[in-house]
Image (cartoon, rainbow, N blue to C red):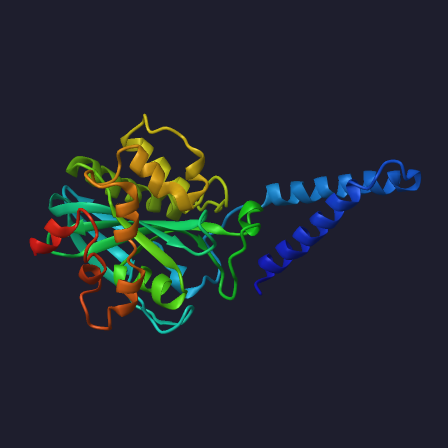
Length: 308
């Protein structure tokens, strides 16, 4: 376990103990000094957490080791450090970082993916951009773990992890979740005009550049995979209303539907049922057209498949 993570675990344990001690019944007169000392100790740990500063200089886990670099020239975008891992286990992969070129004039569609890893209320949210040559690029706001470090929901509240924006091939970032980590994934076509899709793509690049220049902490509540998408969408559509489902990310698909953000013409239950790509992802073997296979039957994506 990295030193920072070890200290964070110790601080969390002590903080929890001190908070419990500070709540001892006041009718027990002899515990009043203990309560006071515990409250002071807990406050000092809060000061310690507040003093922590994010860093870009750590020994990172392989899948978040590199930051996305972008060069934009008109509609042409060149991306360096796009992740294209070949996974052989939940945490094992043949590592491959690649350079990709995209023409934003050839953006065809934008898809929202929800990957459920902890019950129906919590999902990891990802956004995939489709180009008219059949290629897809996924953006995912994630914790930047150190090598040997594991995710902790509470750790995300107490400045244990930095944030990173990962750009990846679908065959990497979707497949590892459905096929190796046992997650259930739903995919939806967003109702988004070309100019809005272009603006969202560029907003992701701007976010990646800012995180590379000024590292920031991941926060389980206020700066996570879903709130990042919401913040970026609000730059395009400022009137987008806040909603509790932004925090309960497993329901953000229903929120998008209620706001008219999903492909029209289908009831929500149809979009959700036909957008469950889990089994299709698991059945798509190596060497197959993964992106095309997972979209078979997903509402709103038929025309893009036929156009290739």
